[in-house]
Image 1 (cartoon, rainbow, N blue to C red):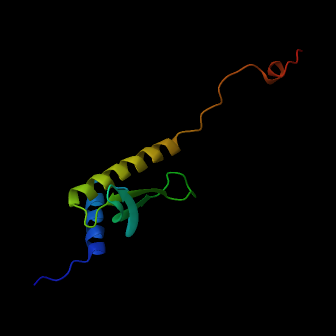
Image 2 (cartoon, helix red, strand yellow; image 1 turned 180 degrees about the horizontal axis):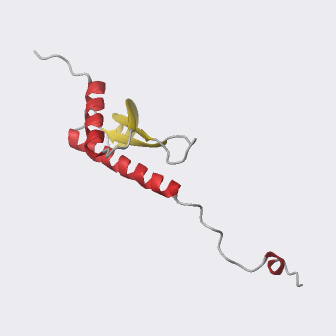
Image 3 (cartoon, rainbow, N blue to C red; image 1 turned 90 degrees about the vertical axis):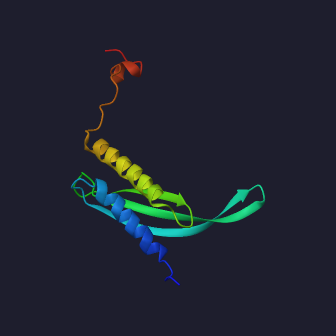
Length: 122
């Protein structure tokens, strides 16, 4: 008889492996947790296991909190490919957020001078 599997440890290993494949010098953090939620099915409410994978990376702006993404995987024991795909998507979304944060704020749209907008004439 084989030993029982520690699913939290397995999810941590899968998440760490998915991050390691594509981190490209960026430091990432992660944590995993699970919960049971009720979903409506044709046969009535049923409990479903949902894994929550929290991914973090440093903000490109000094003194700002980390950028994060939460993946939700509906499965009691997700396949490695599913975890890999969710982590890849989360890392891509965080990279896009970091790029957006590095850009300067956009100037307000050009419009008529405030005095004319209020009906005042000089």
